[in-house]
Every structure is written in C-alpha cells, then in structure tokens.
Image (cartoon, rainbow, N blue to C red; front, side, top):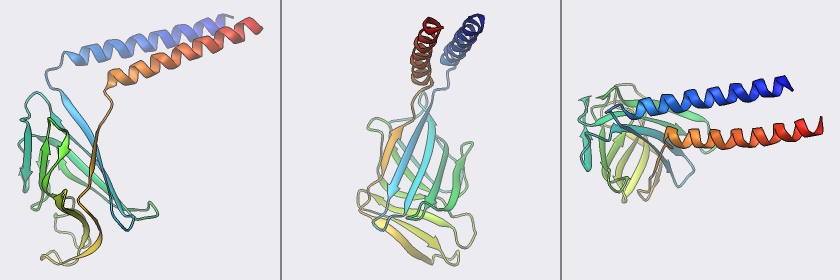
Length: 196
C-alpha cells in the first residue's frame, strides 16, 4: 500500500517539475518554431527533415540562399532514404544559423506554413557522391547525387514538386498527454489496490 502511494507521489512530483520548467520557458523571449518536412519520390526514395526559426523575429516570408550566416533559419537538416528505407545520407544544411552549402536555396511562408519556389537542400559541401533535393516546390523536385562537384549529377528520383510540412508538437501538448497518461495510471493503481 505504501509502495503505491510512493509511486503516485513520485509521478506527481515529476509532473509538477515538468510544468514549472515549461512555465519558466514560456517567459523566454526567443520562441523557436520547429517544423518537420517530408518528400516522397515517384520511385519510392524519400527525404525527411526538420527546420527551425525564431517566431518572434521571422518575417512572413523567409528566403535563404548560399553559404554563411542565415537571416532567419536557425537549423535545417535532412536525411535521404532508398525505397527499402535504408539511409543514403544525412545533412545538416543549416546549423546554429549558418548554412554549409553554396547551393542552398529555401523559401517558406510562415503564415501558411508552406514551402514554395526554388528549393535546394543538402549536399554542396564539396564531397563527391553527396545527395541533394533540388527544384521548384509545386513544379518538380528531384533527388540527385553529385558526380564530380562541377555541376554534373545523376537523377535518383523525382516528383511533381510535392513536399509536406508539419509543425512539431509544443512541449505543453506533450505535458498534457503525460498528465492524461498519469490519470490512467492512477486509475489502474486504484483498481489494483481495490483487488488487494
């Protein structure tokens, strides 16, 4: 009996600590928005990735290109997979607000949460064999592999320009799910206690 109450007290303390931590984070003026994206080619190759920016300072349209310091993007990474879901490569195109690729092109509408226009991510760091996703969103996007770092590449897969973006759940939503799960755990413990 004491063991059950000790478990419940531990869960309550953990829940309170998480809530306080999230509330303290809410006072932080930087409001990073994290988004995921995924692309699927006609032949089954795919790209999955994420990017982030500060919601408090970003304009409605984020346009980034080239290497060096970005204007608004804080991070962008992508992984490419073959049709059997084997990893072909992972690239941190933007890390800490700095682009690693001369060929990087990115356009995002923060109000509609959609990518648009010219798009070129991954690769571009001078390594033969790098993969990159390139084209125009809504027109044609192609997964390509570099051959010689001099503009020659092979087409791996392509689609009609379709790419999906989804927002990463906020921590408050996750805490809500944890709290709901704890209520279920409490109910289960009460049933076990009643049967003892």
